[in-house]
Length: 107
Length: 120
Image (cartoon, rainbow over all chains, first blue to last red; front, side, top):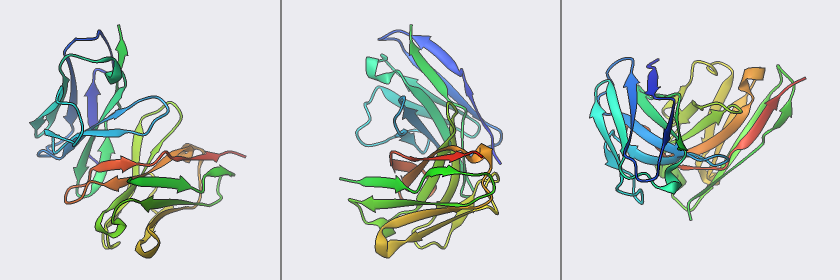
């Protein structure tokens, strides 16, 4: 199976900061990558799919980029509602895997 | 409103079986693939299994292959996960998730989950 490695696993940031999370795949996955946000006690929420397509209703401060093996999720101007854990997810031959997660906390 | 409601979780002894259900509403169920994703306490997300709209395509994570079976009943707007030979490491919150549609598989709607506890 393809492994996804997220970095950092934890980051502390302030409201208004620009935040970038990286997801690296163990082999090329084209653009078959999604990003999810999960808050404590809640189900995950799809933010971005196909590496850079913003899911309907997701604020435009979220953006995704990358292809092949390296991908990034960027949050411009972090808002209080954005403090959460973020996961990347890949699809290869209809087998899915998630990254280990990045917890974004308030500095 | 698009909604997924899981049920069937509970306390089960190692080696025993359990069947999870997910009832969908608010969308045309048989238009979409569906998935099970689990999350162990304090841990990350783990995809368990997915099934295409017509059950023609089914896939499993290696950790559950041969022990779990995914199925769906489009007439009942329901998704199932039959779990056999349960292990302590299967203990988790199990989410049902709707596929976004098309290819490849991404999940755009999630239920609240049902908890499976495996303990003697």
